[in-house]
View 1 (tube, rainbow, N blue to C red):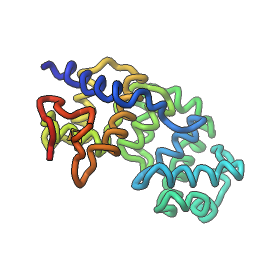
View 2: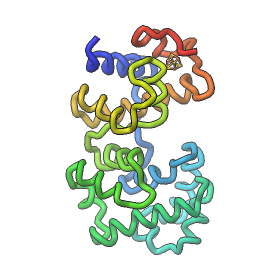
View 3: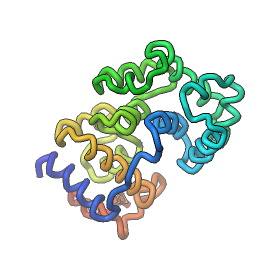
View 4: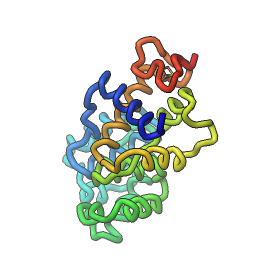
Length: 221
Ligand code: SF4
């Protein structure tokens, strides 16, 4: 089967099983970008608690959050874990938007995806997955987000080998699928869902998984 057809089948199986995931949870592009930094190395429940702290105090704007000291910001986002490191990362991100874009996030997000991505990657603490999540979910531009689930599932179904890095996997999807932000949005969300529910790191739960039999691999156990 051609790679494009294979990746389309991958998507179809997940979509048929889970339906639309309505990602990314967040009311504004700014909230989505803050969430993308807070979710590094933690689960979404913890991020929600940190976001709720900020929302309750009416702080979920770049102006309000930029005015907080590092210590204050760290305290609000404490539930997300690694709160001192994440406070620094958020402040680095605010410095980019305030310093080069006069605090105008909408203007910043209007740039082409490749430029946006490069600028975000120049921020200390923002890596490819975080940058791409921001480009796709906050700016609505078509870039494929790769994560550990994507890597694991593709290896277990013998579509890639373990030496594939972030960019090689991203290229695999972007070279073989239509450049469509709605498709990339849903695809990544579906992969996260199947990874969480079935394709666990320690042991895949293949029975009942919508990907059982995909690419001829019934189970990777
Ligand atoms: S069938 Fe098994 S190996 Fe494949 S994605 Fe599902 S849990 Fe993972």
